[in-house]
Image (cartoon, rainbow, N blue to C red):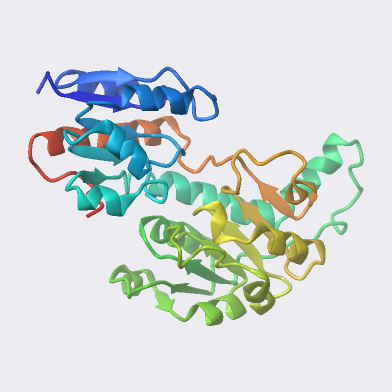
Length: 323
């Protein structure tokens, strides 16, 4: 297979994955990061004639880019679980295999989720600002938060990440776990999670955790109308994709204290400008898409990406095929 070429479009791809690929394929790594303006032009120059592609970028893999690659392109993998930045239908139509790194990041993202639950519920952002501004108030009554113990936690999307979140939060004495999604999850019974309609989940949950994929159906799942269903004491957490939430509607609800707080690891756009209204709110805790950002997890994702490509190029099933 050494004559076959694989293109990696972002220079942050970990060495462990590169080492696996270089034993079998000719590897080209573009020396750019996502936010550098030269990345897309370099992708267009280097994608021509490649047989395999590791799409570790937020740029969209479009029909035009697939056309540019040429008919010899046989396999594509993300270094992520989501594929909303890829024209999946176009790849499938051409018989190009597509993989992702579905479960490699479940634990790391679940850890971040629990961190955001605590940070948002207990007002970490407001407290940190008080200290940084030299205005630490005496006593503990100035900023009372919400309890996790005895609460109802609603998970929108009980996939690998959602299940890992439930396993972690069981140690916090949550009273009830509920979830909504497209289908029943066989793991729900053993986890003690009840499936309910989305409207019921929003009405009854103290914590609403968005862990579902971004699709046309889930765009702005949280919006002006659905926010009205939530409790005044509710905390919404988003670790899926930024566009699961209508951010203008979320800003209004938080500003007017119609819900208690939000914790966001994903936003639209990324990076979010410092001037964005959500950044100004003390009850909105935003972190810069850190979900999978641990050494161990990124290495695991790179390993899975490399294995996806090597298996596909050998005519075998990918570790995590999308279709």
